[in-house]
Length: 101
Image (cartoon, rainbow, N blue to C red; front, side, top):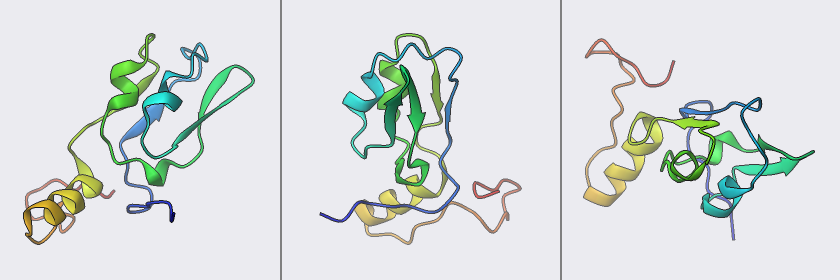
């Protein structure tokens, strides 16, 4: 099966390796294999596969992961596909905010 990708460099996912205890919960709950464990610490191996669902952050026992759920281009694309509307994350900046940089 082809691995899902969203838009490059837009996911609001961050990992604080200093806090990480290497428990592996992020691997267990992530639906898109964004993480791996190396040397007893989690690493983000495919940030562009992150769909910003927030499962990793909600299940991290030491709050080492931060992700803004329901924001950004990935959310806009998913919402557009589910509702049959044109995906819009307001990258044009017309509202004064931009999710893509």
